[in-house]
Length: 137
Image (cartoon, rainbow, N blue to C red):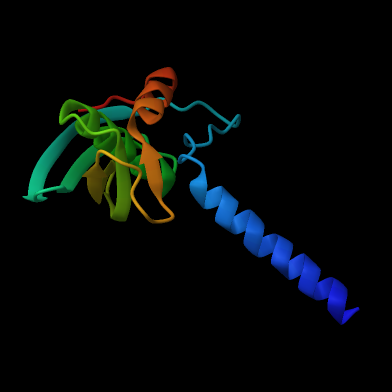
């Protein structure tokens, strides 16, 4: 029994490691209710070399994930504009005041796939954002 538990745990670790290699997926789209967000803009602030802050605002978000997706789309497009192909998520904070949701996200952009668990392929992400109707920079 203990041997089987070790094998199962090892398989779980391997799956987690392999999933870290995959590009970040597009946000899930819920089939429940209507989703009609109003994207209200992106502010981009270069913090230091390849470290970039994205501030986004929107109305009609269902939850934090919608705001995080907006920030991710902004980061992906910015990386492409700057001639880079990848970004690594550092952090995102989300706040809601009334009907306005605000996201404050920080990403590291790079030409090569960066180390870390939350990396995105900018080209693939921008394409996914377009198909979901999420604007970019």
